[in-house]
Amino acid sequence: GKGGSQMGSSRGAQVRTIVELKKGQEIFMLVGQEGTSSCVKSLGYQANSSCHSGQNWGTGIRWVLTMDINDGGGGGGGGTYVFMRNRTKEKIPLAVAGGGGGLGLGRFSVDSVRQHGQGINISRPPLPGKMYGAKSAGAGGGWSVFPGLLELAIMGSSLQAGGAGGKACYESTDNRGDGGFGGGGGGCRYGGGGGG
Image (cartoon, rainbow, N blue to C red; front, side):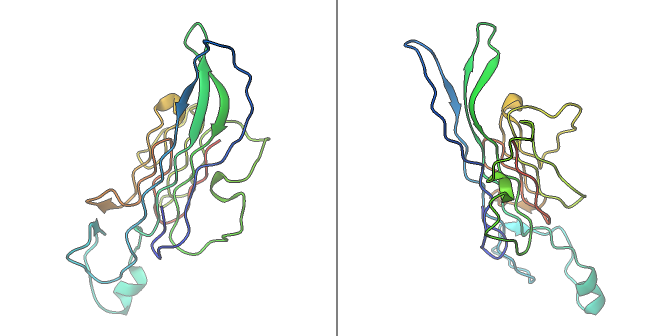
């Protein structure tokens, strides 16, 4: 989804593969969904807005300097997974394109091919992305669950954990900033890492 200035987006990764299959083999797919755009950035109160900042509106320079804007990040796009199952029903990956991390508030480099899980990094394991700090957007889900990771509602779930999209860190009546199905991270103030 788009950020608060209605620009940018956080997509799931892309993957292309050729697989030789035999007649009668079953393959399974989870196809990711686009994340939702954030609330339109507005510093004034709007009665018709679906978004709620959760803060009391004030006046004066001190209030402006201390206000906290969290609702500018759009949700990350969900990943797409193609897999088979063996005789014991264990999932065997054929193609994995991890979910995009939630978008943060503000400008970013549009040319960055590694942003939001779009670049290839074969040295990384197939795990969810990372989050940094309290106002970080949700990390995108990957193939596997990170061992010992405490999953938060803002994070996109890995395929092994169900592939749900993360919830935005702000409230809205129409799910603004939520990550797409397939493990897209929820939006917040700072961006989250894409999944593997």
